[in-house]
Structure formats: structure tokens, C-alpha cells
Figure 1 (cartoon, rainbow, N blue to C red):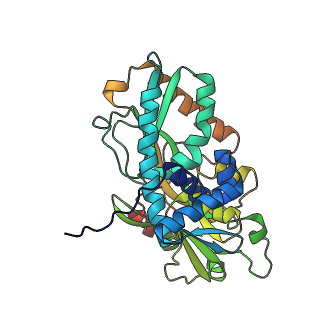
Figure 2: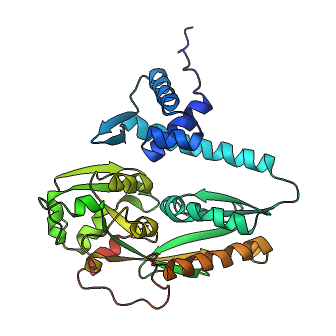
Length: 337
């Protein structure tokens, strides 16, 4: 009896190169991260495409975009490499080291938490930190997680959670695009003349689009842009905005550093900011008294406070002000940030 020929397994090294290139949407940045040459990364991607019989990237403007096949492989590769790395870390961990596992949403992990973690490691080199990025709310006890940084839409909260910061959503773009006199950005309606960069994904609450809640809140649900580019990961959306490919929905504190450094601007000002909700720190009872957990939560508070002092985009997580007229219509649709 003939059996269908099994496709050979993909090399882990090839997947690492592809995952880095897909995350950065750049062969050059991937090569820098992996300490390879750009041509080496390019050859790895070509080998993968030949093995799969499908193109993984297409070129748009001055950058790269994942094809449908690339999007599918990126999601699978990210999950697989996370499992491999987690297992490797656990096996290689020193017997006497303190371990700490923190989980939060993928956008906050990639844009805010992970870039800051090196500061915590400098202060506490004795603590091994494992970061789990997930848009679904994981069971802290079943998954043996020590800390969750969870977002909650306006009007709701995280039971037993400590408020950390509020989140706002608003259009952002590269400074050059904001200065384009042929397509001025003076009001939300001017977005009709621009390409919108959208995050489209699926969460526990169902399909999610970053632009949807904001446009509804601005009473522009019927707006027809000049074009739309869709991505499955928030960091890809923001990188495309920095590269000048269009206008994205930014979030604070996620893009606070990019705004502070002038890589992005908010062309429509404060009136175009939509209150999304609040992020909370949640610690299960079994981890609450662990010294490493206490140090990490204290460090989180310090980072939030430092962001506020340096103009990092944080609004104090205290009593909330009433919603702006016009923002009310989008409140029911905001599921995540």
C-alpha cells in the first residue's frame, strides 16, 4: 500500500532566522540580532521557501510584508521556539537560582516589558525571569505563573489586581508623513487620504481590529482609507509606521519610547486619544510572599513611575475621568490592548 511521502522536518536554525526576520520585517535587523550576515539570513529564508514551495515574504514600498504562508509559519514558529527556549532555560537554570515567571499580552510584552527587563536583571542578577506573552488569559495556578500584567477595558477591572497604568489609543505615524503638505492631517477625517496600518488578530473575545474601536469612537466607522495594510502582531504594525508605510493606532505606554525619541508622532493631538482601560499587576496567593516576586512588583511600580516622570505616556492609574462625548460608542467594543 502506497503511503504519502512525508515532508522533511524544517531545521530549527532556519526557523530561528525566519522568526527573527518576520518579527522585524527586515533581514538586516534579523542578521544583527542573530550575529549573522544579511546574506546568510536571506539564504536561510530562500531555503525555507524552497522546502515549503511557498513564498514567505513580499516586498512593499521600502520594506517587507509576510505572505499568507509567512503569517501562518510565523505564528507556528513563534509558539514552537517559545516552547523550545522555555525547556532549554529550565534545563540550564542553576540549581540555586530564583526563578520568576511573568505573563502579559503580546503587544505589551514586545513593546514595553521586554525592553525594560534588562534593567531588572542588572538590579537582580540572581533572579531568572521567564516571560510568557499570550493574548489569552492563562490560568496562573495551572501554568505555574507568578505574576500577570493584565489589561482590562474601561469600566471593568481585574479582581485582586493592583492598578499600574491607563492605556490610550490614538493615531501615530512617521514625522515625515505628518509633514506631508499634499495630504495634511488636521482632523480624523483626513485619514481617508492615507494608508492605514491595522492589527488584525483573534483573541478570546473574538476578532480584533485596532482601527475599529477608534473609528467608531470618532464617529468615522464608514471611513474609506486610501489603502490598508494588515498585520497579526502589534510590533510589526509599529515598525511599518516608523518606516513611513502608513498610519497606525498607537497605544501608551507601548509606544512611549518611540514618541519620546521622535520616531513617531501623534498628528491629531490629544483630542484624538481614546481611553481604552487599565493594566493591573496580579499575583496569585502562592507567589505573593516570594522575595523575587516582591522585588519584581516593586520594580514594575518604579518603571511606571519613571515613565510618568520622563513623559513616557502613562496616566496615573487612579480614579478615571468621564469618557469624552463621542468615545462612548466605542466602549463596548474595546476588548484588549
